[in-house]
Length: 302
Ligand code: CP
Ligand code: NVA
Image (cartoon, rainbow, N blue to C red; front, side):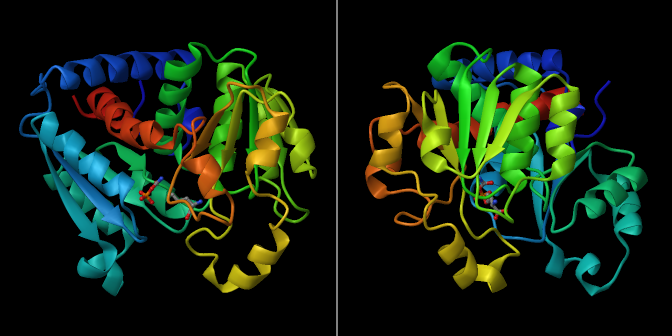
């Protein structure tokens, strides 16, 4: 039984397929104007230590459309921001709400929340993972490609939180992953090792053009993640050669789909021509946050 979602690898392949099937069903019903009231009287607390557009709004709308309620908690506005412990916050919230979604700087905060919470805790992005994003990505890939097995997934750029979760997701679903990143920006070794233990096929290289060859999926993320702002200039310099642009697209399969979790910085990690072009799936991907998280909430809260 799944009790928390801190890592995408907390889910088995079957869990993922169940969530995606449920998400597709909910998406189709929403399109026909049908919503479900399964989470009536349930409340989700959403703690944010960092900014968010998609995560916040998609979770809020998901709870509303499922008949429940959500509470946005900027950590500065609650006692957590004045030094109340994470453990006490988790214990208190557990007496009121039915689930806690948290976007935090440190993964350890999520572990501490989950250890002290009697309700499910969901990782809404931390320094090392972004599992909710990856559920939406998988839903989008399945919609476009109809399968996962043996697809070539190429990640260009920073080996960051989204990249780490993608590595695990590729291993779980049988996609072959290539990461092209500058030296010093590789994904977490524990994620690469874990993926290999799960039978994942993954290579970490430095040449973006090589990584893009025959790609079914080309994906990237910002060069400067939240929390990395002090390294802004250095990073812009180090990642210069790691842009998804039309030259890179030429290496990939003709029907390559381009993913980006957003927000995008046009002219940095991706050109406007590509992110707004015919191969881009980024707005379907963003929409799918809603459907995938509804399915996740049903699994954890109902
Ligand atoms: N992709 C994503 O998590 O977006 P937000 O930062 O806007 O939530
Ligand atoms: N890697 C980015 C993702 C934003 C959704 C960050 O952590 O800021």
